[in-house]
Image 1 (cartoon, rainbow, N blue to C red):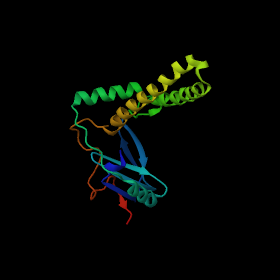
Image 2: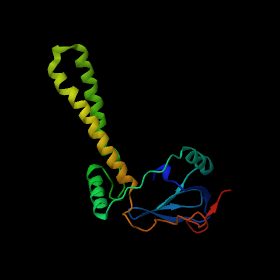
Image 3: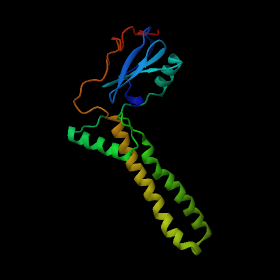
Image 4: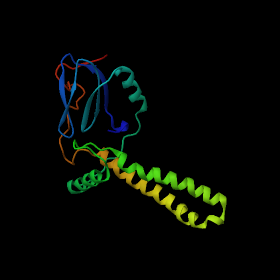
Length: 182
């Protein structure tokens, strides 16, 4: 969920412990503590937090411009998510962990350091220059390409045309007993 897409940021609480279903088929227990409700159509999240009022103000102050909606067919969406799962170290719960794409950035910093050293020494190390100087921008460009596609996959978690996930209307309670803070 991107901060620019948020339509509602609401701190609150619930007296009873509830099971909140998250994408991937697992449930997280929420309730009996302060919570923060985040709504960005078509998603809603209820997160247990320590200081919901302060966090709500922080999130509201960081909101940017909404992302442009990406139009894609169900086949394009499936292929994008298959690609994202192959490119990550994702868990069996359907979540994406972007650690699988970070090696490109690490390798680019490593080769860039050596490229700088080889170039500063001079033409005596022409072999190192020929390898590291072109390899560094290639790794950076590949990381940028994969990063942008991964962000798109994370932003379009739900398939095109799917129902809203959770109660996204601000005047309806997300869980039984929800009491918003004033």
